[in-house]
Length: 95
Image (tube, rainbow, N blue to C red):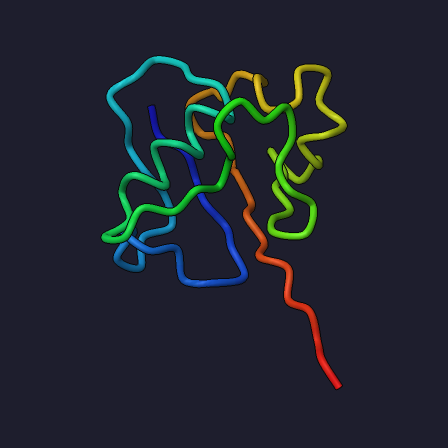
């Protein structure tokens, strides 16, 4: 299964690729983010273990331009071959 990735930061472990090919016919958004985190040279925790949602202070994630929270199954939404997952890291300014 191929999943396209868009981001506002360099996703560690992707080596400037804009998609990931996984040895699975389907997986949930949660499983995808966990796998993506393991691909990084230093593992990234996009999803905290047992969490029902992503920390809104850390990440915004869309599936095919729809915020994952608006998908009926949230983090358990099934991804399909060719879907696009957009991951945005939220930056906070200081003064």
